[in-house]
Length: 108
Image 1 (cartoon, one colour):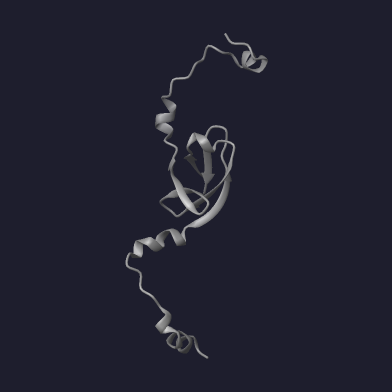
Image 2: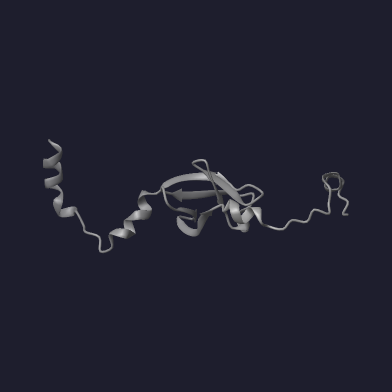
């Protein structure tokens, strides 16, 4: 049976959706990522910031070209934002501790 005939034979089962935007999450790409210790993940060569509670965990991400979401138990729990390298460059860091002191566990 040709595809058109199959469709027409089942057209009574087709339902309309009140809010077409509610279908958007169904078409997001899905993948798993391990959150690095700096609270970031990489998707498509871009770096994204993840809430600190996910550091070190393997998470499910769903994304399209514009937005990235973290999902738990099939529910979106957080929207992930791209790393802003300009802001990150201006973060004050404590430089009183040398690398050698960090390795030995001493504080300076």
